[in-house]
Length: 68
Image (cartoon, helix red, strand yellow):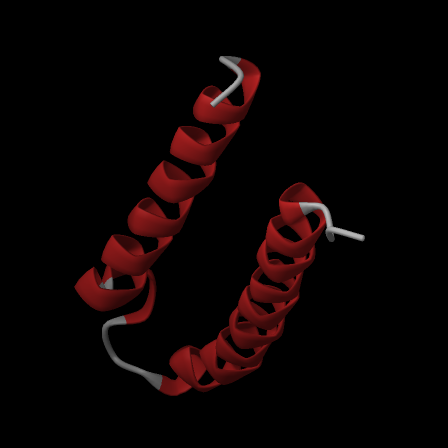
């Protein structure tokens, strides 16, 4: 019997999502060190990363709503 390719791909995508969530949680914990940084809220790296994450989430949401 043939295995459903959708099942395999969805399981893979969900695992990648879980891995991304773990990575983002680790970064969030690391951001605590930013409190001691002189750049503070003006940190370009932190703002750039945040913007890129928000853009990726928006892009994924938009494509999902369009039915990929």
